[in-house]
Image 1: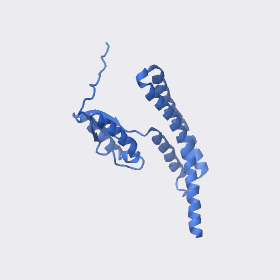
Image 2: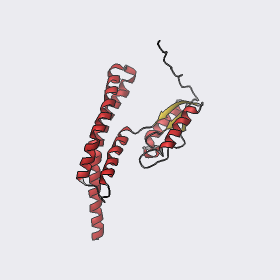
Image 3: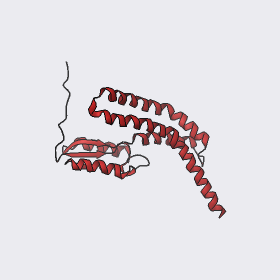
Image 4: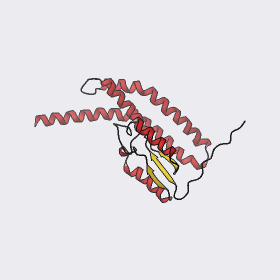
Length: 193
């Protein structure tokens, strides 16, 4: 028994697109990039609406888990919504995992040290490489066998995965240590004057 795939209707002028943020708050994303996407959708004649909690922020994520789920459920239940656009920060989310592990490993220490950062990066490295690696494999396959229509998009994703993974592991954590040293130096100078 073969099942016939369900093909959604094409969007038409006046249809509503709901923007939800199941991972990263819209308030934490550069407004220019979100604004650019919204402008393009409006130019296509589409009406753009936002999830009720899309701009709320709870530390590094978009509001509470319950609020994010509620936004997604509301988008599916609203018959006027013809498409759902999710805003997810892939690399940012990966960096947050590393930073959260640094926070956990720091415990009650008042400062972050190099050994704490190294331990945290090493603990999250396998997860980061597995997540990025499996995503890379899927996008790589889509790049070569997905057809000309999505080749450029997949190429951008491949480059983004490579640089995003590198930045999460090799740039963000050392940068955190650099900021810490700069703050300590600035505090020492303030006390001296």
